[in-house]
Image 1 (cartoon, rainbow, N blue to C red):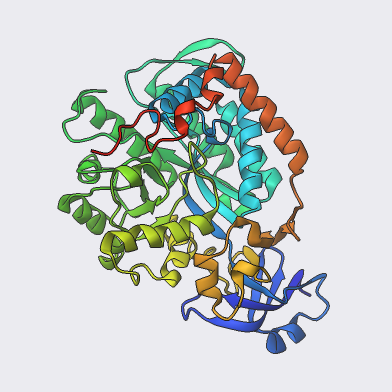
Image 2 (cartoon, rainbow, N blue to C red):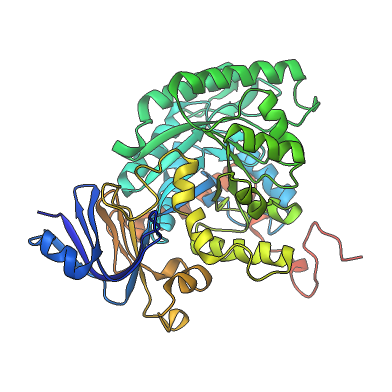
Length: 480
């Protein structure tokens, strides 16, 4: 007997044949899909299902996968009102000294709720960020985040690792005491978190490693010999546990450099990758490393990730949100549409990066980038039951004759009606089943205000007058 039977959907399977099945049925038993096909064929095989979902008027797609995001950012949204330098400084102050375990737990629940209500069932999330400030100083922060993931019913690969030199760095620990943290300590904490939580297909929590990006010959943070020593230690830990390595902020020569540091391979996921050199692209091609393209990020304003060109070279490219601050969220529908417009504008060609490819980048290509394509990324028998039912009965999605086009160009997070993750219904009829929105929002608001107050950053919550009546932001300059 099936656990759940979805009937009368239009299914965008993203399977090997890229089948689009009208009047489809999907049978689920436990945490796996057991059958996908025409309702007339599948429904009799799943007779007696414990729960039947009538998906008339809805399109079923695989659970969306966000390959690059940041924990912590959800509670510092819009700080600085567009002044990115002030925002980065705020992240450093908050993440290293102004946040307790309650902050990270509240932020986790808030962003997991946002993802849940947007059809994102799997994500890669760095435990911090900004100026490479990662909360790998104490396992309590990673423990709290992973507990929230399990509560939500979603799936998160949490990236932990050392920050950027100089070491030691001053942190305020989970007990409120100021401590000096060095590289070795952060690596030890990362190893401890791997041992505790790296079981993404069983428990929903996975751990991967993160290391700051260093440019060739860049001695501003640490001498090259020290960078190579640190890279060797990270590579050894990755090899020992067989985990993914991700990095945030590659551009203009850094990919080739990280290859020279011995960090590139099939389980390497490099974020942004803007303004790449020919050597960078060759390094990606030769190593089998994957790219997390974030078309809505600030780095994609400052430079361009050549995603279509990389895909043409056979390089795995997945989509990321880079969420959720300072100016973007976890709506992967929005990021799919942004990716199409971003590259079409560059090439002045409306046919570049067609809708099927961007859906692949947020599903099966993302699963491949994480080494999870056997279990995630498509609607197929044997794979994990990660399914989103998009309600097409909306003015902006009508007529429903071309569901792929409609979903990638016009849909948004609010169109996700029902979400199943790991065979568990986590959203139904737009109502979360695992997290209480009112309680999560109240907790998050209190934690954000308390952290900003402790750090003395209240002024960054004010929107300056210069946001009105002109075409420049607070830190920018008018066009020449």
